[in-house]
Each structure stands twice: as structure tokens, then as C-alpha cells.
Amino acid sequence: MAPSTLLSSLKALRLRPVVPDEAQAHLRRLPIRRGPVNIARQVMLRSANLGLTAAYRLYRADPLLWRFTARNYHPALERFAQLNAWMICQHASLDVPAYQDYLARTGYRFSWWDLTSYTPTSKDEYVRRYEEAPRCWRGRIDVAGTVVDESSGSSGTPFNWMRSKQELDTVHKNVAGYVTMLFGEENLFCINAFSMGAWATGTNTGQAMAKIAMVKNTGPDLEKILDTLRHFGPGFTYLITAYPPFLKHLADRLDAAGEEFADFRLNGFVGGEAMTEGLRDHLERRFHRVYAGYGASDLTIGMGGETDLSVTLRRELISNPDFRERVLGEEETRIPMVFQYNPLETFLETTEDDELVVTINSAAVMSPRLRYNIGDEARLLTFPEMVELTADFPDLVPRLKRAYRHQRMKLPFLLLFGRSDSTISYMGANIYPVDVQNGLYRDPEVARLIESFQIELQQTGDLEHRPALHVQLRDPEFFPDAALADGARERLAETIATGVLEHLASVSRDVAESLEEDPSAAELLVHVHPWRSGPFTDDVSRRKIKNVYLRRSEG
Image 1: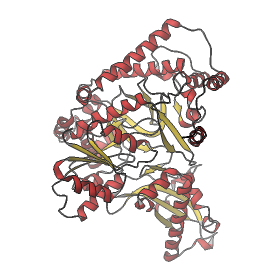
Image 2: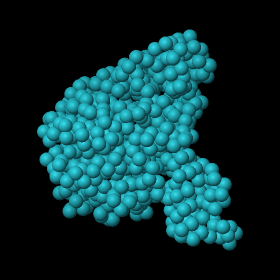
Image 3: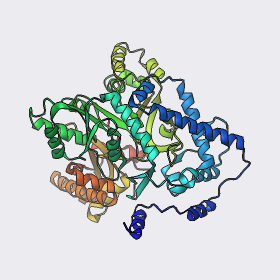
Image 4: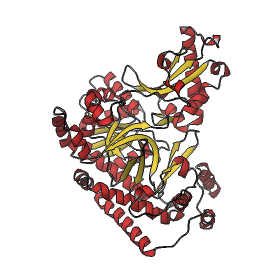
């Protein structure tokens, strides 16, 4: 490749070649806080942090060691994990130029062992304000072996997330250890149906699975997956990794094939969005077991994962109102996903508003994630807290004990409600109200009829989830044209669906790629409601200063 072509490609990715003199000039422009240097403290912290990273590397050396560590986790290690998170933040305050500057701007003062003294970071307050190199250790990008993942923001502008070779190796070993705990590693064949574009999930899943299984990266292509099953036959234990809606499409396609694949042992692993228990039940008519994982492009994949124990807890939250009230509170009707996670790898906290704050406890992360508020709403439970909460439910305890025997993980629990920024995730793409609004209002003749809108993920009759858009028409007393008959509302719904999808595809690469890879992603449900009817009958948004754009779905 010619040098000019390489430079153009790098600019297209919004990355700049790191030239030492140029990088140093940029660092000098940062108003880095200067003060007395405690050499002994710096040496101690750097040595301890690097030593812990090396120690963690040992238990990832083999999936067997990973499983042993996860199964023998003790709640007392929570304090050790918090200490490690503090050391990561302090190490970064010394050796990451952007973080040093960020702390200086936010009034940071050093305090021994106090993790909360470090100002939380976020995409808006930290990532957008600093270029890639200053957010790395010593202000340098390790070019060789680094892979760039991409995610799309609310404006459609792509965010690039760099992961070094050492960091990716860590991620892949963690995922491999977790998967072998769920499915074993004997004769395992992974068919990776995640999108294989620039997103983190697809490429990293394929590389992680290659450590423990034979892998074919088909992407979300139903016929290619069926051809693969036919070619290799029923002699393998298959693991299909995919977004939940696509796995549903595959299950339905297998049903249509009759008995052709009856002798195949199929398992499923999903991510990228929430999955209902109704969908899991439907999938497990065709798949032996189906689990979900939790991750994010901002941070890493494999931050948390389902186990039989966490699934049993979630099912009880749905079926037992008394248990749900005990765990979630009297007013909470939403059902979160329930994962188990390892604080030694990713230390989690929640804010007063129940937003999730994450610190990745490894110096191997080239651009460290430091008390990073990802914008997900969540709650945390330790293993002993879970035991205490369930003690008063004698019918539940035996079922939990049976579920625990399968994976035997004593890791704490992450109860995840989803995005707190009025976003919904579908087929790996984030849908933002501002983009829906732009799609709605791009046709003036349509816009003048619309009072307000809300978006949600809605379960259809066949157990699939689809993004649903509820549109409220204007008050016909003042806007007579908004008094539409049923047929006119149906035609308006079709027009709105076309306009919104076209706009989403034009501003979000994630949405555009979803539409290209899986036509079902274009199935946007649009419901047009007369003034103050349907979900707008008792419209709480009228009692708020700001509009409510996200409609919460139960279960």
C-alpha cells in the first residue's frame, strides 16, 4: 500500500499517525497539573499495579484455571478489587496525560485508598474532549497489533475504540474461560453469526472462540449457517453466537426444516440487547441452552454473563411479585437482565441515579477505562446479599441450589435495566430519539400533524422484539387535519416508517449495516394514535418540562 493511501485510510478512521515530535507538542499544550513528586509513592503504585496485572495474566493462562478462580471467588476479594481500581486510577493520574489534565480541571485531590476521589469519566466529558494518544499510557499508541472497533454516536459520528494486542488477548481469554464453563470445550464448533463489520462483538467473539473451538464466521446469514450444519453434520457440539432477534430467525428456520436437524446438539449465546424469558423458552425448543453476555464498545466485551443461577433469579423476578418487590423495590415493574461478573476484572459501582460506573482493572488496557459512566441503569448485588434476599422464599432456595451446581460461580450479580439516556438497542445498533425525531419531521406535511412520540422495544406475537414508534396526533380542535380516519392513520404509519428508517440509515452506520445484513431489521412498528389516546391517554410527559421519549416495556 502506498504511503499516501495509508495516510488517507488513517484519516478516514479519525486516527492520526503518532509522530513523536507532534505527540510531544500536543502534550505540552495540555495544562497538566504540576506539583510535588513523591517518587517512592509513584514507584510503589506502578509496581503494585503492574504486578497485579501480571498475576491476573496467570489465571487466564488456561480455561481450567479461569474456571477454578471464578468458582472460588470470595466476597472479601471485593475490597481487593476496589483497591486495584484505586491503583489503576492513581497510576493513570501519573502516566496518562489526558486523565492527568482531566483530574486537574475537575478539582481532584489525592487521597489514599479513596476510589471516589477520582472524578468519573464519560464519553461526553472525557472521550470527546481528548484525542486518542493522550488517553493512552504515556501518551503513546501501540500501533502494531492494535485493533480499532467502531460504534456510532447519537449524531451518527463514529467513535473509534483502540484495543492493543495485549488487551485483546486478555479479553479473548476471559470470554473463552466463561464459555467453557457454560458449554464445555469438547468437540465445540462455534458458528459466529454476529455482524462482522467494524463492531467489536463479531470480530472479538470469533477470535475468542478460536482459542477453544473450531470457528466459522458466517455473519447473520441463515442459509450459510444451515449449509455449514449440513456439511459438518451432527457430530459436533454447536454454539451459535448472534443477536437475539437473529437467533430467533434461525430457530424458526430450523423448525421449518422439520426433522433434518433433529440430531444436532445446538446451543446459543447472544449479546447486544436484552432477551426476554419468553424468547429464551422459545429458543430452547431448538437449542439445548441459551445464555446472554454483557459488554460495550466503550469498554470491552465479556464484562458479565448469564449462568443458570442468574437465569433462575431472573425468572423468579418475573413470576413472583413478592420476590421482585424484595429485590427491586415496591414501585419497580421492569425486569432487568441478571448477569454475574468478576470485580477483579471489571470493578463496578453505581451512582445515586443507578447509573453504572466501570473501571477495568488491568494495566494491559492501552487506553484505560477509569470510573467510566457508560450510561446504563443497573443495580449490584453481592453473592451473600443474594443469599440473604432469597432466604425467606423456601420454594426458591432449592431451585437456586440446583442451578448453582452447574457452574458453581460465587461471583456478584449485575442487574441491568438498559440505557439510561433514552436509547434502545436493536440488532447491535443504538436508536436515539433525536434521530427518530429528525426522521419524523423531515416531511413538513407529516410533521405538522404530530404532537409527540415515544419509542420502545415491543415484543411481537412470535416472541420477537421490534423497535416500536408511538406517534400522537395533534389536538383536532386546533388542527382539524389531524382528525384522521383508521385508513388514513395506517397510510401515515407507512409513510413515517419509511422516512424514519431512511433517516436512521443515513446518519448511523450501525443501522445501515443492520439493514444490509438482515432485512428484518427494517421492521419498524409504527402506531399512530389520536390525540390523548393509547399510551398518551394519561401522558406523564405533559407533567414534565422535558418530553419523555422512551417508553418502558415490562418483562
